Image (cartoon, rainbow, N blue to C red; front, side, top):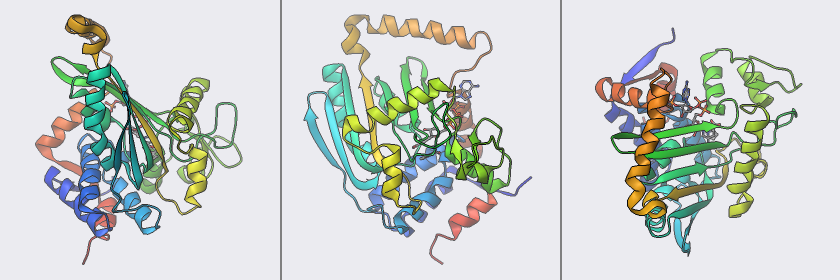
Length: 338
Ligand code: NDP
Ligand code: PYC
C-alpha cells in the first residue's frame, strides 16, 4: 500500500491557502479556492480535493489565469445574473454572484446565473449544496476541455461536462448528485496514473481507438461518455447551455484557447435555482414532504442515495481528519516557500 500522510481539517485548509498564496493567488481567490478544495478532501472526493491545488498553481504559472481577477456581478435581467470572472478561477465568481441568484429565485421562482470567462477546476456539489441551504432546488453544469469522444465516435469533442443537482430536505442534508457525463472524471484517471494503477475498461480508448486500461494511454486517447448515447446527448446539452447559450466557449474552444499549456479549462458555467415556495405557495411543505416518500422507497430497499457516501465521509473526516498520499503531500510542500 502506498504511503499516506494524516492531516487535520484545519491543516487541509491552512496548507491549501498557503500553497495558493505562494502560487500568486490573491487572498480572496485563495480563500474561495481553498473552500472547495477543503470540502472535496473532507468528503473524500479525491479527484477534486487537495490534488487540484497542483493544477491551480500550474494554471497561474502558465500565465493564463489572472490570479487577482475581481469578478463583476451584473443584474442582467429579472431572472438572470451574469458574473464575468475576468479570467480568474470560478469559486470566487460563484461566491460573489450567489446572493443575487438566491434573491432573484425567491422573487421570480426560477433564476439563472451565468458565469463567464472563468477557469474551472472544481466539483459542482459545493455550489448546489450551498444554494439548497437557502431552501432552493439547484442545477449546475459546465463544460471542460475536449477530452471525451461522442458515443459512436473515437475523437474527443466533449468535455467531461459535470452536472449537479440539489434538493433541500426538511430533516437533514440535501439530496445531491454531481457527476461527469464522461464515464468518470478525468481527475480520477490522473489519480490512477499517479498511483501507477490500471483503469477499468469502459473509461477510455487509446489514440488508436482501442479500449485501454492504461491510464497514460487513456489520457492521450479519448475518454468515453457514461451510458453511451444518453451520456453523449447530456454532454452535448451541457456544451450548448453552458457554452453558446451564455456566450461562452465550448470544450473544444477551451482546449484551443489553452494552446497546449495544460491550464485548467476556461469557459462558462450555468447555475439554475428554483424556489418551491414560489411554484407552490402554501402547498410547498406538503409537496416537499411527498419527495421524502420517494427517498424512503430508495433507501428502504437497501439502495443508497447519491451523496450518502459523501456525507458519511464528512462525519468521518470531522472526527478523524483525512489521509492523503505522501507523494501529493510532498508535491504540495514543494510549492511552499522554503
Ligand atoms: P462518480 O462517477 O463517482 O459519480 C458521482 C455521483 O454519483 C455522486 O453524486 C455520487 O455520490 C453518486 N454515486 C456514486 N455511486 C453511487 C451509488 N452506488 N449509488 C448512488 N449514487 C452513487 O463521479 P465522477 O467521476 O463522474 O465525478 C466526480 C466529480 O468530478 C464531481 O464532483 C464533478 O463535479 C467533478 N468534475 C468536475 C469537472 C469540471 O469541469 N469542473 C469535470 C468533471 C467532473 P457520492 O459522492 O455519495 O458517492
Ligand atoms: O476531472 O474531468 C475532470 C475535471 C475537469 C476539470 C475539472 N475537473
